[in-house]
Length: 68
Image (cartoon, rainbow, N blue to C red):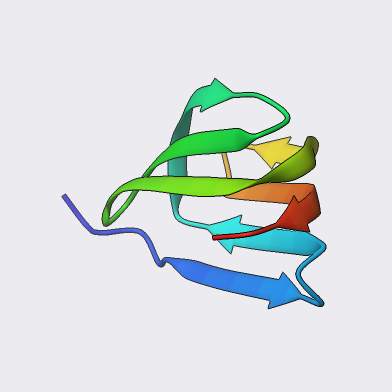
């Protein structure tokens, strides 16, 4: 099985775009937990909103105040 490319881009700590996402495991205004090509990734913040989700392409965009 070929490993999917994995990339994270954080713009001004308010918009996070990712590739290589296989599944959204959980989502709330305070945290997003994603299964990626390289393992589980947890994003913490405030007022987080899922703005784009394309699991066929492995792409996710999150907006809000990203803390970690």
